Image 1: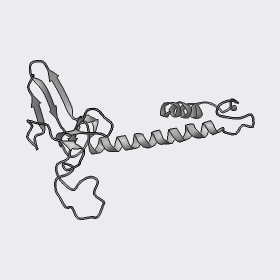
Image 2: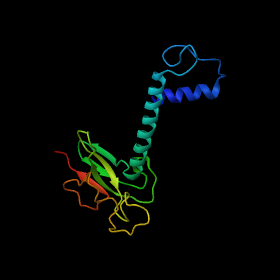
Image 3: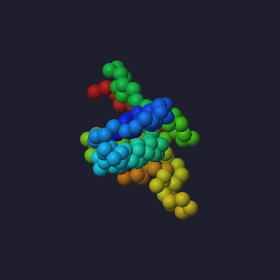
Image 4: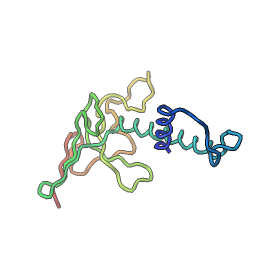
Length: 153
């Protein structure tokens, strides 16, 4: 739906409006149909979901990852991993998302108050987001290591 909305925005910006097509989205009177209202609601929901996903990516940017048959896997965090520039590096953690079958690797901030803490409240911990309930550590990786290596099996 967001792709269709982008297409519509492009045409509204670059082409002169000449009328509406009578059919699924507009009646003979030129007024929107209930179907158009449903589509517009889906576009709004999609935009909100996209905003939430971007917010989560800023909070938990994806880890860098590499694999080779000789060295195995390596996960690591840097101040730009996941394409998200920030002033912290973070440590690799498994992020479990509701409904997902497998966790994925994210970089987690290790200092300061939790991201979800309301503004103005005194910080109760200085562990960043390490205590988030949807996170898990990687077995065999030190808790504050910026890089985790897993030899081939």
